[in-house]
Length: 287
Image 1 (tube, helix red, strand yellow):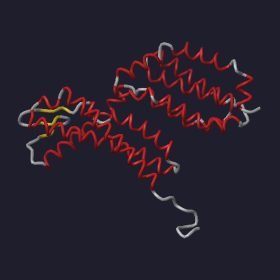
Image 2 (cartoon, one colour):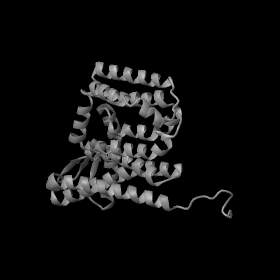
Image 3 (cartoon, helix red, strand yellow):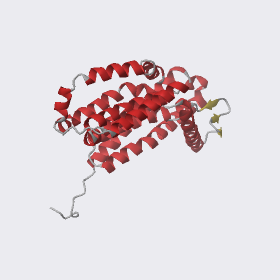
Image 4 (cartoon, one colour):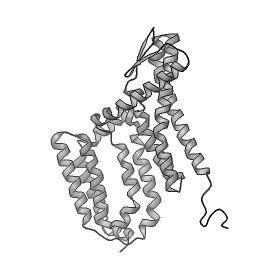
């Protein structure tokens, strides 16, 4: 029996599973959607399920005609997902509760259709991780070194211009003003979004795995460098125009402009990687 035939025979399974998931995650997922709306770090969460669905849709022609081979190992994944759900709910840890849904989904597909289908759906399932906000402890742990790197880079650039500037930790001090590099300027906000978009670009437009890896890794320095540029320009303007240049409209506009610049650089990197010549088997002289 093929996967398509299995779907028709057990058509009742999908609405029943959807109802069970809605009941189990009704207290959990609405809060995650609220996080997407309220926290700029995770506004890309709205796009993640759409991109994951697009990846899955691209695999449908291959999946339809595959033989459905139910595998009991999928039940192990489902049991692990339920364990995460109960543990996360018991201690009030949202990240664990949210991640559990991915294990339940993967386990159900594995149990119904087997390993070959799971391998084809591995990318869309894994991509869904990007929609889940990081725990604040992990976010703070990652933001701290990024803030130090951004403030060090921006202060170094300002010193090269001959400006009187002193850096202490995440503080950039001028004679007339002191700027603090906060979490929003660390680059982590744009980094999480850039990695998600970089993965999407890599798997949509690049074929070779090495090109994809390079593009995804490139999002890290792109995010750090563009945010360092943001702090550098803010410091330059604040030195000459005062605190107003580092607050309000300019601060918000600079954040948006920097993210758009990071997106453009990511797209340009992907375009250049796509233009690189492919290696031919048998050496450069192979026909």
